[in-house]
Image 1 (cartoon, rainbow, N blue to C red):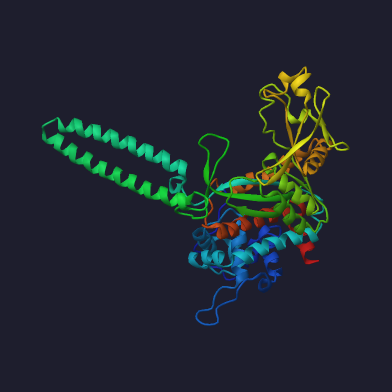
Image 2 (image 1 turned 180 degrees about the vertical axis):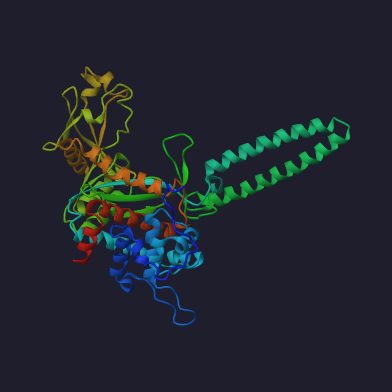
Length: 477
């Protein structure tokens, strides 16, 4: 069939073999990986050299290039990286045709976690020096990613109680089936009784194991135990039955370039204690004296907002409405106007609420405001409170919350900017992971793996902004 393009004979001998560099295009991202790693001061970052005795080891630069290329191309498994090193032309070009075994590859990621995370931060510095990070605003968000720990291998008081109820129901069912089998006199009934007795013994053993696990969970600091990955924790979500056992990846993304300037892996299921720390990490990475941080209402915490002010960080996030007054058809706290000059509140009926008492709740000093008009002459009392009088509580540092709300009012599109900046980053990372879990275990190793994901994402983002030739030229300058 001469109308088709014919390939060469795979057994044909070549007198002048092709140069492997000819198989790697000039605009291939692998060239950026090669240049970036070669420019790193590996010793300063913390990468250890080869062993002084025994068989020579692989150079840290070779292993780092292999890992960055793997995460850049959605190949995170050490066994898959071993296979790629023996068949992928770009990897052969990158490593000089070296093919480490999977154990060596996995050990490098485990043993050089701190250095790998430092290399990720160094690329952010490269992007800043190239002018890719010039904005003074970042968007912060967190996303829950699965750990290498099945939900059945995670125990909390609630899950243990639920499983004990299930096992107890099964035991009662099998006891009833045994009673029925005992009333029958046949060989089949005897076989059925033996099978049921065996299964009943297994269920009783499971119940004893759950009882022992319940005691261990009650003795643990946070009331939770994971058997496969001891640092993984149950992460609840809004959807019913959609919770997972994993980690919470925090990321701060520049709103101009969409480059991740800072990240952190925690095993808390909430974001309430991460606003100030992520803001400080982002400010340090961007060398910004004043940084605006956009976050969603899940980050709201009065002490965190106050800590941001003390660190020169300007947070913008909505305050969640936790009071049930609005839901009950009554006036909410937002309907009462605070007047700082007199330290009073003006209620919807025009009366003045003065400071009456102070209390400490959850470590915060709160001042209570009330007015005697509630008891005598208020015409809208039924729309305000179901009690004798309406009381408004104000945190001693409430002015920082009021100032933040004023900033949000002046920038009505702030939450839309936050959403389009940071949420697609997590969507991309989850897509690269194949909707799977982290390959490593424990918080330290997972943090290293997350840094490799972020480094790969930032390299792709920098290439999208400048292109491979321009990025390499800028890196050489």
